[in-house]
Amino acid sequence: MFTGLIEQVGHIEQVRATDAGKEFRVRAAYAGLMNGESIALNGACLTVREHGSGWFAVAAVATTLGRTTMGDWHEGKPVNLERSVRVGDRLGGHLVQGHVDGVGTVKAVTWEQDALLIDVALTEDLQDFMVPHGSVCIDGVSLTVNELLAEDVLQVSIIEYTRRHTTLADLKEGQRVHVEADIIGKYVQRLVAPYITRARQ
Image 1 (cartoon, rainbow, N blue to C red):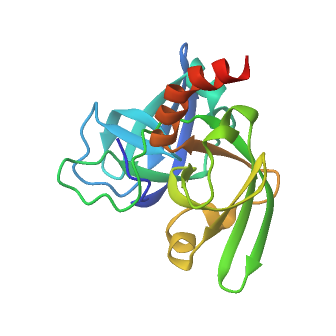
Image 2: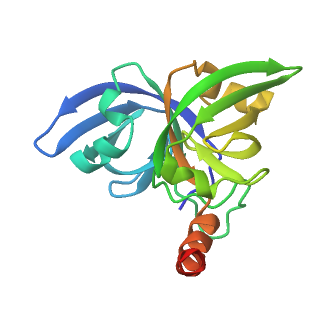
């Protein structure tokens, strides 16, 4: 479990193909990492396989590569990093599982006074979970849905602090991003789905 508050931006140092998928070695200034612990890279929960001074390694299986943008990751790519939350920590963002629900596409990046507005096109399976001023996780960052511009397009507003401490300020039109819907919305949708189906019959 995570909060969507990015601790630091790491960089992919090495990408290696394996029989099961890909392994990534990440350059990051973490102290006290342990093999087997969970860490989110751009919002995708992975397991630390090895670590050393200033680096750690994680692996993504073929299923994960197919559901995320990780298949396109390359050496030098910056990634948002967050270690799993500990019981008793402040929950400053929202409850994030580190399970990427879908891949969105940046439609536009614009400025409005001091805010950076990012419009993200959503796949159909994500649309029902988005509500104005609700929570969403984009590339691992806990954000508020600023506006629903269309049924399949959400807008988020990036403040100056987030621009400086995450990779979101570097997003460009056409780039793909990880999207995780709010866990509460997913459970509500699951619970009401049978009633909606019956009402439509």
